[in-house]
Amino acid sequence: MTFILSSNNIFDYLSEHSLDNKKEEALSKVEPISAKNFNLLVTFADGRKLLVKQERHNQQGKTIGEFQNEWLFQNFLNQFPQLEPWRLFLPKVVHFDLENSIIVSTYLDNYENLMNLYRKENSFPEEITVEIGKALATVHRDTFNCQEHREFFSDRTNHLINEQVHKFVNNLERITPEIFGIVPGDGLKFFALYQRYNSLGEAITQLSNSFNPCCFTHNDFSLNNILLRTNWQEEKENIVKLIDWERCDWGDPTFDVGTLIGSYLQLWLNSLVISKSLTIEESLRLATTPLELLQPSLASFILTYLQTFPEILEHFPDFLPRAIQFAGFSLIQQIQAMIQYQKSFGNTGIAMLQVAKTLLCRPQQSIPTIFGTAATKLSQFSTSLV
Image 1 (cartoon, one colour):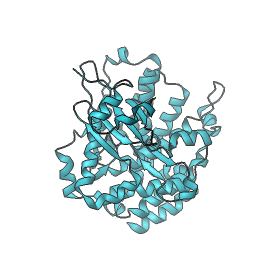
Image 2 (cartoon, rainbow, N blue to C red; image 1 turned 30 degrees about the vertical axis):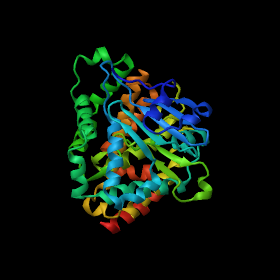
Image 3 (cartoon, helix red, strand yellow; image 1 turned 90 degrees about the horizontal axis):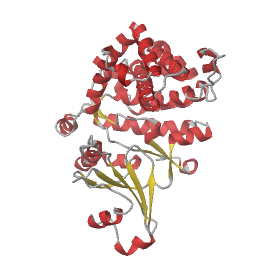
Image 4 (tube, rainbow, N blue to C red; image 1 turned 180 degrees about the vertical axis):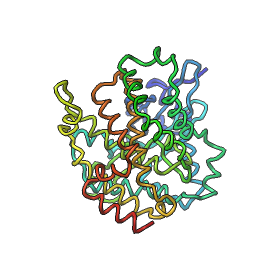
């Protein structure tokens, strides 16, 4: 029978696995944290905090197995001591229970979710994206084309992300009658528009076929999976933590870079002023988080990434256009999530689709739009390295 974690049995579980001092239980507290999985924050009398997560089970008591990847990542770090510097920007995992799909890590009390912070303050300091670019490039650079690292993952992961990219594309291309019983009426508008743009389908298929696994990747590198130190202005260095490595695998670095760019673009697109009296173009211009506000941070991110890992351009001269395409791909994925969970596809979705189409079909021409005035510097920098 599947063991289901709860506030009532959490201390017994921690004690059983030597993660709890029985004497502290009376003075300790447990708080649920909303997330896609079942998360409990345990605060002990001495101030120590643990984040205990259990992956959701289906009706048959089975899970996808994403936490297994997170623990595999920890084993990867332990096996290759030269990667020890990564721990400066990673959470600390202290326990994994494969049988019950439970993972325990130290809680980062003095950090805040970056997406929440951005939405609250609507300010995007470049110092933050510099640190993000440095951390992500370090992960990609230190594992790039390393046969020993590749072999570590070849037999240990289920390679979900590689399969998901191709499956996602196939589902868009091969629409069957069953979709009418799954997708709400609004959602069918998306498929109607998608089918209208032949160039969009061709661009996505081409991008999927170009997927080139060559280094260790996060594969869900969005703003929701980045934490920022609350006193980051004082610390300056090591101010970010990259979390939730549940989908990590041997993958394509442009997928990570494009996903993050797409996550920033969602801040812009989700801030549109939507009205029947406004055209999509007018809504884009009236966004409460205008693209111009994001451009300096996006440029700092990609410039820092390339400065930290310049060799990537020697192997992939088209690295930047492909990253832009994957940003567009991530927006298509977000539209699909909106249709699946919110059962809607309105003007925001239409605007998102238009932007995604431009990024996918005209990536080179989209570079100035995404990076603003820094695009020229970025272009010169890329050319000088190739």
